[in-house]
Image 1 (cartoon, rainbow, N blue to C red):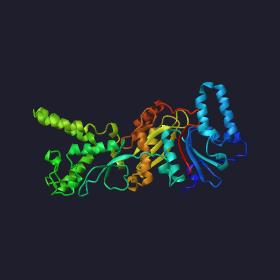
Image 2: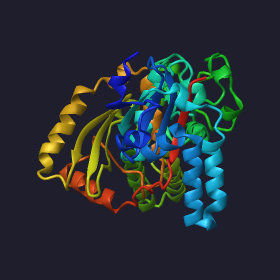
Image 3: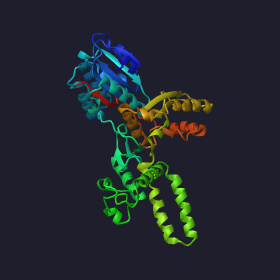
Image 4: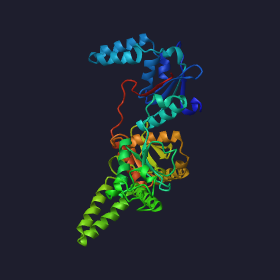
Length: 415
């Protein structure tokens, strides 16, 4: 376990007998991930809030001061009475824990976007509450489909744990239901075996119902041997990872068949192309081999017109730079990004549980509306023009809402 100073880049001592107003002035009224700790740095509460100063005023101020603040606000805005009283009850006046008695130090790190806040909070939670954070906080896993074409009896399955299985992992996919849909789509597109129990009896296990309907190539009854079946499964994984090449090839076949007046064949190919068209769209729009889970993301920076650049590789999220203006020259930033990505090219082979959680955080933001979740660019296609455009697109996104209160977005408390 690292020290708290390794996780948070700012800290301040809290003395309940000292000048509270001076204490509040020593912390920013900004978006942070912060920890309230005891006299021996024992964790008390970990939070992500939009306004650290307001949050500490609510949690560490006296009940009398909180009541005075509420009364003052009511006098200024009587129409807000219900919401202010509710906020006071929830955050100050009736809290069950008297934080003034146990909190002696505040640690915090500034964040400037929902993506950065989620990633920093995850790292802090893992270190501060290593035994309990998974059960206390609902981290969303990333979903993949898995297949190992080189096993004796290959099959597609959905998974959110790519650490324990060898083979090909394709994702991320929006949720587990979409992942199962992709499994079925792969089976339908390539007439793969749907009944694993019969497949494992090959070549003496069939024919299964799917084979009898000519919707399976028949590895179960020996219609194709297992080596050829494994090659078909490997081809299917390549198509799922890069459907556009297959779509173009099959479209050419369809047009050729139609030109030769083989309309029945052309219609059959068209149905196949239509099914292929589901790939790369909707819940499958980010599907790629796990080794290619590599992005550059631009997120909002600390001031208007600024942007933070992060490099995402399998299991890692690394801060690269803060752009104060549109990157010029872009080539320098591109070289920096690509050099860092090259250093981390073997990340998927060394993926651990913490890395899987980071992938889940990234996947959650990949599937958010583009209007306000930053810009994500796949490494393999990014170029200088795209990088400059990403900066302009980021500035056109709707900015994050400023919180008039503490703006709690995440919270973990010692049990």
